[in-house]
Image (spheres, rainbow, N blue to C red):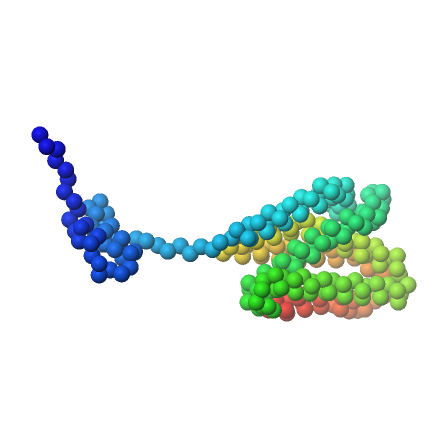
Length: 263
């Protein structure tokens, strides 16, 4: 007895052999529509999902993570001291403060993490939100953004040192800059892993992480100011109007310039 085989799907042979369809996707849709288990009116089954090769971005993220881990392993004492001093408003642990002040090599590395992180956030805000490009190459845009942050912070520190020299308050200026350094370095430690996540993500997730990073920058800026209020009062010992002028000139205007550049 010869076995019986199910006959082919009605219209399948015609759909496969139809050479009038130039697009392979249209022919594939017609074949699926001829299948009895599928709805007859199915169209556009094949969905094009655009993708891009992010191998370079992934390798860059791994390299940055390796750099962050290397700094953490090479300077473990500075890392722990930074957390201990930062989480305590009062400088009761004098020896920890002295270790942080004297370890200039570790401070340079941690400050580099701060500039890399903040420069990347500014780069994302400028190129992503405002769609401004200084150059056709992304790394040139990033370097320009980081250089702008470096110049802005350097100008602010120079003006503070000049103010301390004019009023002969160098000791208070030293404390002020030390507190600012602590805030910036700690902010860099928190922003750096977040920047790696921003680098490897896209879409709404990347935008949400970018907004969180921007909010952290503003929050730590306000915290640094609150931490330095007693130092600023002893530094100037002037009226509230002059103190307000200082805040506008050296604290608020640089941030407004950065926001204006982003917009």
